[in-house]
Structures are given as C-alpha cells and as structure tokens.
Length: 144
Image (cartoon, rainbow, N blue to C red):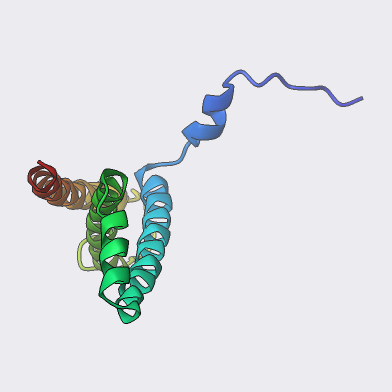
C-alpha cells in the first residue's frame, strides 16, 4: 500500500516554485509579457482597421477605448513592454557571453556564473523599474 504524504506547504507550495531562482521567474514573466504584448498588437491592428469604416465608426471606437479601464490596460502594456525589452537585452548579453564570459573548463574550485549573472540581473531590473516609473508618471499626468 502506498503511503500518502501530507502537503505541508499548501497552496504556497504550488505558487512558491520551490528552489526556483530569479532566472526562472524572469523567464516566466518574459513569456507572459510577450504574450500580453502580442495580444495588444493584434488588438491595435483591429482597432486601427476601424478607420476604414468612416469617421463616425472611428470616433465611437476611440471613445470606447478612451475609458479608464482601457487606460489602465495601456499602462499595463507599458509596464510589460519595459520589462520585456530590458529583460530581452539582458538575455542577449548573457547568451552572447558579453557579461558572464565564455564557458570554461570545469576545474576545482568551481566558479559560478551566478556571481556575475546576478548583478547584471539586478542592474537591468533597476533600469526596467525606472522605465516603469517614467511610464507611470506619464500615465498619471495623462489621466488627470
């Protein structure tokens, strides 16, 4: 008979991710923001296509998308774009070996690329946060 183990972590065991590091969460957020930007791009194409329906149709569409919930959605797109763009640049730096260096032969004592990778991650996320704050200030003054 198989022994049943008790789940001591509860829902946080599912959400917490266990031993996942910053890279894993950045990867997931990069994928999510990419899908969000794609959805916004498709909606933008559809909305822009409404111009072919005449002035009245265009103005009614713009009035609909000018409401506060859609303004908040546009702000979320700005946040997603800032993170996605800056994280993409970070990934380019890492993949090309510009920051963490080329892989070497594994010899003791082992060096960890995390020691060089984590400062790069923090710097790029600070840049993303600054861009998000700038976007937030812009939207705050636009909505007022």
